[in-house]
Image (tube, rainbow, N blue to C red):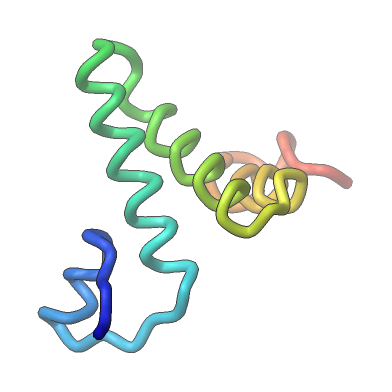
Length: 82
């Protein structure tokens, strides 16, 4: 018996080859966007926070997930580590 996460539905419909990280990123960003709509706050920051926090919790690597989020989501290299 197989169980699928809701974030994995796009993989099953479009037959995409993905790993474990893609559903985690999708669910984190979607939940962050949902909570931003509910709370009425900035809709650009909450999906990024949701993505980084779910990745940090699922992979049990909070520092690496935070650095990855800074590297990929920052508009400038000034925010990343040297």
